Length: 120
Image 1 (cartoon, rainbow, N blue to C red):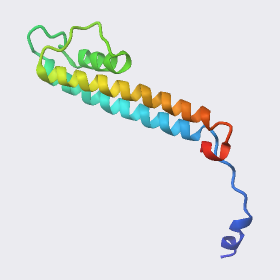
Image 2 (cartoon, rainbow, N blue to C red; image 1 turned 45 degrees about the vertical axis):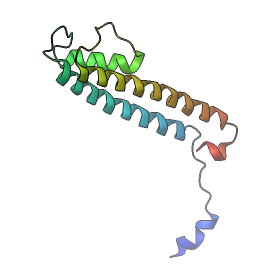
Image 3 (tube, rainbow, N blue to C red; image 1 turned 90 degrees about the vertical axis):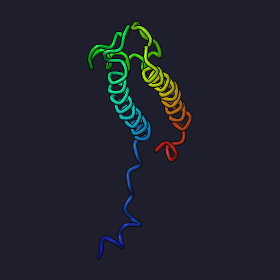
């Protein structure tokens, strides 16, 4: 009861200026992991066993989808099935959005760094 009346007098510590950036990057990493896992499974389902495909197991599918997300290119042959090509295009689109999103998070952080009340 008494503590409720003292709340206006208690000074809260200002949030750390990096808190928002850490949250945004954490969300980005989690989303990449989810998309990479989904891309791996889908590439394996579509490309495993197809003629002329270089994806023979889950490791190959993980390698392909991870490289597509990180560099939007691969040393492996392009997907040979329609489903694999659609997944490949989706991975590339997510990669472009992710790179621009991470760049925007850093830009926003540095833009508001001189205003600590808005950086959190």
